Image 1 (cartoon, rainbow, N blue to C red):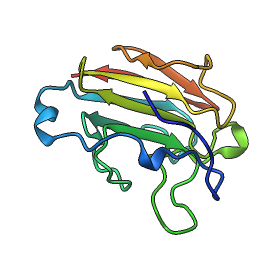
Image 2 (cartoon, helix red, strand yellow):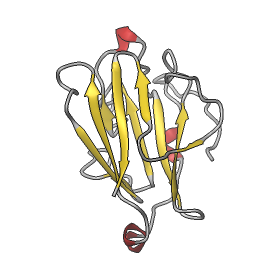
Image 3 (cartoon, helix red, strand yellow):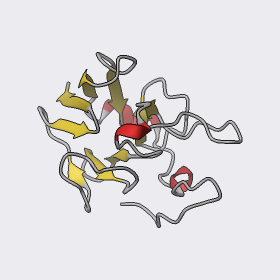
Image 4 (cartoon, rainbow, N blue to C red):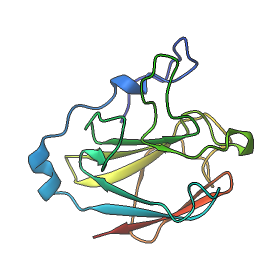
Length: 149
């Protein structure tokens, strides 16, 4: 699913270079995924992430590469946005870049992968996992539910 996870000068994986730009017409073919943050820090609690084939809708990272990256920091030293959604609780096991949700155009499914930075996601994932309606994603003190529409 992804290239190597070597670290750069910021100690971050080379995720900026993963994924190709997803054609806008793929959005109408893919299911819309909504993830509700049901528990976590106050700033994140009750947030809803809407993800389509291009990634998190309204993301400041703005790559349109089919990837939604979740972690504990927003911007890098050069001002670039590193994560699509930030859960600012790195002291509770959330890594700088903790997990990724990636859309696969071949089978039109979303896959989740733990990025190995932090304490893991509920059950540590070493291989991509196809996300299904009703899944609960837990890491640190945060819990999210997955819903497809």
